[in-house]
Image (cartoon, rainbow, N blue to C red):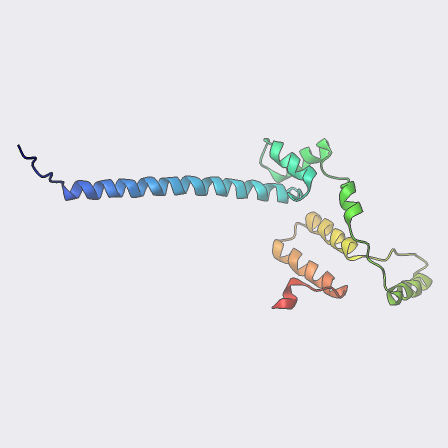
Length: 164
């Protein structure tokens, strides 16, 4: 009693391969949809003025499940106290920059002309002011990058463009 060799239908094999390929594509589409949803959520929070690198903001972002409108997210973050006041640890961790003597003298000359005493600006102060203006005026990422590069160059600091 010998076994008869099994004969498979080539069309059925092709259909099985096609179904397998479709299942793999469907899995990949599901993964990409999840990734896209995550990116959209991150963008929503960034548009609302939240920084994922800030521990307080990240905490708020993990727990937020409300309306996906950036203005509503911002309003809720303000109401909950996550936006508005700077993080004390971040302010303490900011490196202190010594103002060069030439710059102090320039400020002194300006003081004599205007009668006002402007505070010397550190790079951190300049970047904070740029960030506030960018949020208020809703700058594009490209414009924000240009303004930051310009401000850093004015301070005599290296920019990302220096290496290119």
